[in-house]
Length: 311
Image (cartoon, rainbow, N blue to C red; front, side):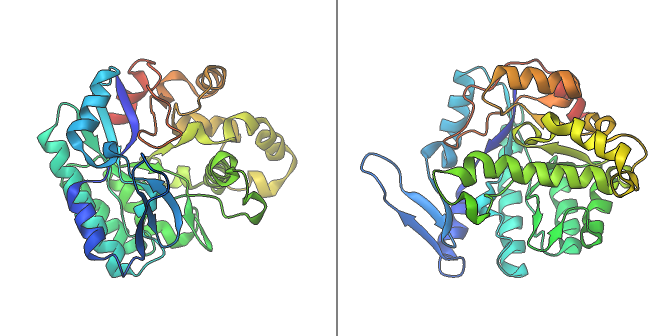
């Protein structure tokens, strides 16, 4: 069984964080007795630094215990470092990518990996993507955009040109939503995260970017957010408004099966609906392990989607 949505922090990355602790404003915070410390980067989105994030043998053992035979490991979104200088983000990207490449080579039967890139500079991001795939990584994980930039903006063209040329997997993983209305009761995570994916995915469809770069293998986290459920509204808008249809060669719903989606939905009826809408070959098993809201063990749903994405 595959698990396409997992996260890990190699030892070299932890060392880098400790060495640059002041520059990236990193703190280790003890919140509760009996739990691990929380890692907080730049004062936001702290998370419990469980041993399964940093102990590769324990990570592999836990995967094996639940029947996962091959894991796709990604860097954690908290360490994208997009808010820092290009030098910082580039340096960490190189350390993270090399570390994950080493891990995937050592445990090639059990692990593949995606890298990270300095996304605030798309030319440099394209270069680091190329280097990452030359190391043996399958592509990269990125956020759903930057402050002031949607992924469909011309700003990101150099990155998508290179990703298209390399036929790279581009795993789009949301960051916490910063809408001030959600600053209570864990809503930035509960609904803000899938909302960020929804906005990004809708923009990518309506922009026509997928027609410009058809070889990029775009994978959306958490089942594509709310997009599959609301695709009928987009189709109606396509019929009604030229602003919706202007960049498209087909109805929005016909673009859904040109992306991939993980199975991290926590609800079998939701997952069944997603598979019905986009096709079994476009949904890959995932867990979001070892974050608190992971689906563990991941849904055992066969290999069709994973093999389609990896070919």
